[in-house]
Image 1 (cartoon, helix red, strand yellow):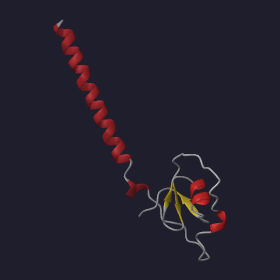
Image 2 (cartoon, rainbow, N blue to C red):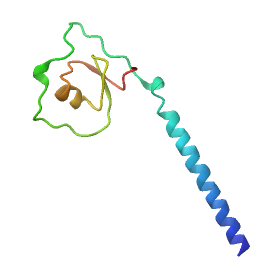
Image 3 (spheres, rainbow, N blue to C red):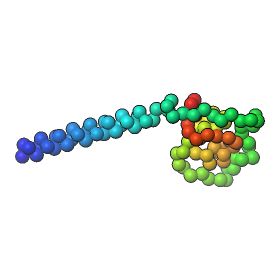
Image 4 (cartoon, rainbow, N blue to C red):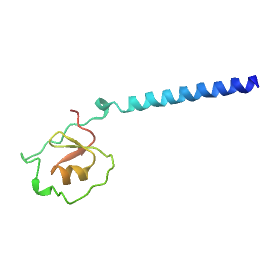
Length: 96
């Protein structure tokens, strides 16, 4: 019975260590400064085109961030275009 308790304790410790390492890796991988992008440079001064905005359209709620020419991070290209009217963007989060 004592060996079972020791084994159970060891598994609990191993699980705690595993989850601690996983959380640390997640935090490190989410360091925005390492993965951020600068907004695209537009040739003309028109970054926002209000005719692109469509309040009746719907976008999927997926996280594929894009950095708009207005230096705003949008959750995906659909949201940037349909909700923001952004004319130009690059993949990734803006370096705010």
